[in-house]
Length: 421
Image 1: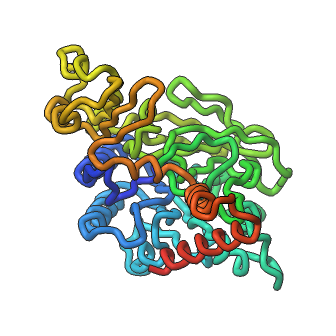
Image 2: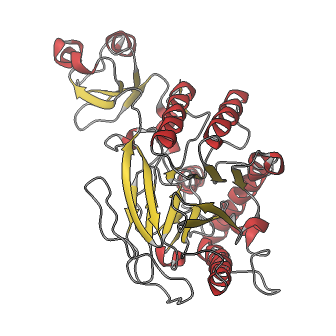
């Protein structure tokens, strides 16, 4: 199985259209699936970068899914950037081999994938991104809605997954125990975030413990852009849902998978870097082998369209030959001169044609951004912090509890409007 996520088709990197590079990654993914002869490809949400993606991004997805389905079973879930309704509108018309999981009524339904050997198979449970306010009623086991938290709705969804798996294990239809996989889009505690992920907090709570996924051999996560394995602490026991005891070979970084109470939980990460907070990340796709609960993984590097880097120094040094080796990279350039040089941005753009951010930051002084990139820093800050700072500046005092509650309601109203777009 190949595990990938967070394609964000249609995204730009500081004004650079990434679609051609995203297309190159999808070409790589099709070739990788064919060469490795995988039985399944799972995509853990954030397929598009926004609810209403550009036509070119939609066409790229359509063509890529058709090519992947010729090689393997494709299971794709919606993320918090996607409009679940738009992404899944044609799910019923999709060709065999493509399963789009975008609706709450699909929770707990498995996609059965036969393995390469006759006695191996896998049950893949897709979970769409669970918007708390939309899911806490339908996923509640009784008449009362669930608590307003990601942990509550994910726990309820996983209860349905575990119940379906237990039912299947009580009446096995094949010669061997199937492996179990959950494909989800969430912020799991212990995961390391980057600045380029969109905030998914509701009521001040955004993360869930990894133990929510107890009883599953492999959890294919999306949302965090850094490729990483999340440590699983012991969760509640569930004898009907055995946990994999295999070892995970993660390109030299692997540890034993399947600790008591939890299987292997991993973020595939995004295939491209979407900000300078991802500067030192090695982007990859996860190749997963499942054998009756045993899990091994290997990371396959994604193609690198252009190096991402940052340089700093005096204007004279930056214009000199010492930086020739990075002149073709996507760069954040920092000029450290005490005074801002004349025509700084224009001259550095000539020196570094692919510079994305140019700023003047003298030692001990305030930053002077060039190229209209000031908004990039604001985008990395929690919107509630930005609004609170503005209110404190305009009113002369920080917001009180009632004002904070009103701001939170306004933010949730905007998000609801975006989801309905």
